Each structure stands twice: as C-alpha cells, then as structure tokens.
Image (tube, rainbow, N blue to C red; front, side):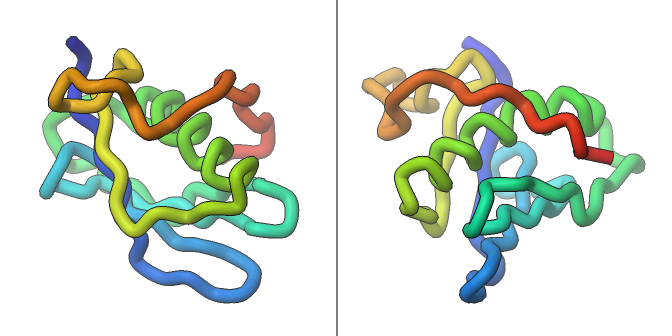
Length: 106
C-alpha cells in the first residue's frame, strides 16, 4: 500500500480546472489542467512540508488528471494510494491505461 494521495477541485472555468494535491486533508500544491488539450501546469508547491518532493507527487497526480481529461469528467474530489488503489482497498473509480507524463512541467 502506497502513500495516500488526494486532489480537490478549487476552481473550474471554461478553459481549465484548478486542483490542490497532497495527502488527504493536507494539500501541498496546486495544478491547472487545461480542458482543451489536457496539458497540466504546476501552479504552486510548498517545499517546506515534510514528505515527498514535487516530482513524486506529479508522478502520481499527472496520470490521474490526464484520465479526467480523457473522460471529460472533472471530479470535485478524488483519493487513491500511490500504488494506484483507492484508500479503502476497493476497485478504483479510475479506469484505463496511464497516459504518459507531459514533458513541459516545471
């Protein structure tokens, strides 16, 4: 079982969705998912927290956000373990193959 990861929608506009990410109840950063092309931009990351670095979180969060874009469905909240399973051990609501990570991230 991996580290629990959570994303929560902060803002949704016609062109993008802004999510916080981190451990459940303890966000450490924000990412913007562009609806038109699925590009993901790191908006902020708190380097002062105790825990994984931004690369670790992005490796977990980016494929999940890309799956939202692929389905054109942007949930308000999502949570899973870093190994890909939901925290309660049931089958995940996320389905499909993980898309590749974009190369334009900061």
